Length: 268
Image: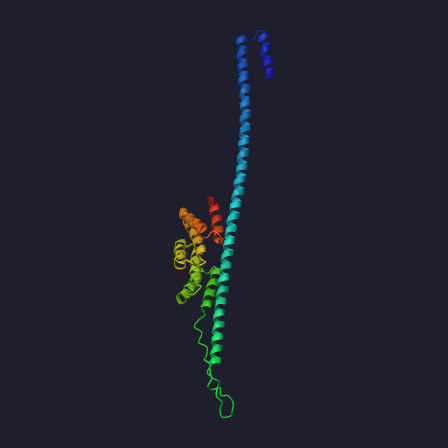
């Protein structure tokens, strides 16, 4: 802009322009300089805003990836917990069955020892005709086989067959030590089928019928998940907080805390 000022000054000196024209030109030059400065500032501001927007986009992408990783880890832990529960309960049932068999065998041995010795027949040999060993009863169907078959169907994703098998087990073994487990896996099968309302009712049945069962924390946790999945987040959060309050040291409490964190809800 300085050459323009010198030119105007030279013209003024030769009388080509008046003093007022010279001052007007100076004002216009000053306005142009200010406008140029504003343009430069605006351009710098736009670049800075664009830089901030870029950083925000990068941070958002990182957050979304972290959230996806967290969800995947929660699901993986949940699956491991379920598989471990299934293995433990089957092992426990087998041990219980073995203990019952050993007890029965001891009773049979004691009964044989308490019985009279067999009389000798005409040849002087002990008669075996008097010793009557009852034949084993016909197998009316092993409840554990029914249970295991249903659980295998659950693991393979055959949820309708799993539900049918567990219900068959419950029909004949309502007082079994595995009754609460069978009822729980029915609820899990319904949950896996996304039949969340039915699953909620079945999880309720586990909690109400077997209040001292080790399946109760899991039932409460999955009940909370189901409520969230049907859009009733407030009710789901209540269930998850209940898990933390009533079963703070359980694996389910850890899963409940992670789910609440995923929802943006702070926990103590």
